[in-house]
Length: 186
Image (cartoon, rainbow, N blue to C red):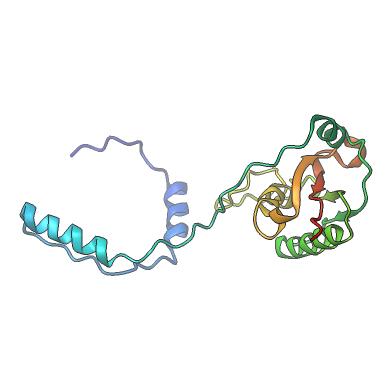
């Protein structure tokens, strides 16, 4: 059989070696040298389907679209003309620290019936070390990239109505306006 792919260089082989270094197989594969009959294939397929465990939840949550605001409110939010009732700066925090600080801040703001707050994440991109296994594009801030994910998952998606990038006067690409839902009175 001819090799139809391109040649792999030493750097790629080294990278692949580092990637698979700590990987262990889940189970040993049993190779069968004889070809099973169509009946045996059908039985094996049926048995494996019955024996398979339920699927685990995915690591990436299903993101629901941001809820719409009326045109006037959305225009005020995007243009930075809405009163900012609180702000938090997440600079210098790890992802875990930033998430917990954000969650506490937004929960508190929601309890105080605030509607528009400013979250400053920073623009990021100062670290030039390349991480091959990161899902975040190089030159983009980790917190800036993760914030929309955090806002679209529980429990924050229960209190956040919409988020928009901030205007330059409020931090530009390194900040977000967060518009909180109105509390329901029972």
